[in-house]
Length: 245
Image 1 (cartoon, rainbow, N blue to C red):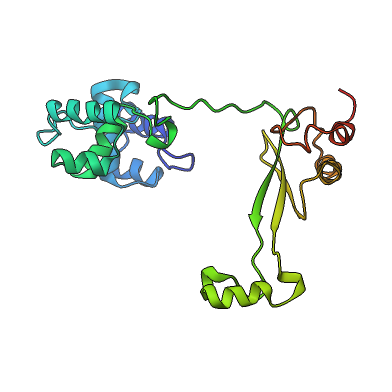
Image 2: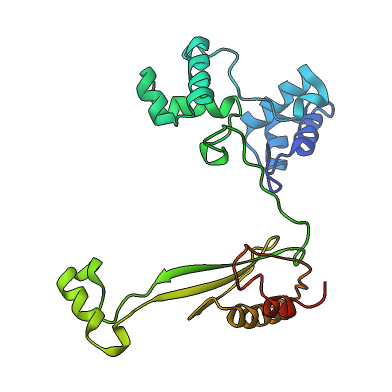
């Protein structure tokens, strides 16, 4: 398909061909006028003589025959293994003695979904939803991560050094956890996050007030909030922060 800035769009090709065929322009004169080679002018003129204006559109470049195409039996085996066993191209290719890129082309040709789009247990395509406008639904959740002691933990330094860093000061005796509070708009994927010290009801309520203010500053009016059944989210303090239903 021609890009918008191409010298010869279907309309331009038609004008070129009409100048040569209908108006009798020499090929070189028409080629110079339309800033193309004489060979190009001759090609479109010949196609216009044979097919008329319909011949000015882009034709398919697909070959009429492909003698080295993957046999139909092999394609059926690839599809059967993908559907029944849900293997990837590399594993299917190893099993059948076919290159993984060939397996991938076969899967793409028949429109089979990627494994990342499937539920591995059932093989069904995962249907993801998305609301129609910003603010219709905001997801709120907490991610708990262990704190790393000052100077590094045992994963990087080994047990002995990690233990010394952990108990070296009163502040590090019980590193505990970081609580990452997140609020994500379902439509725009705008996200507001804070690292806080706990997940108590007062903390989640205060976090939501700040998150809601942040969304409003960006022109997003929150209509609904979705959370899990954490204690903080089921509290009266969080319900009051959300406001009247």
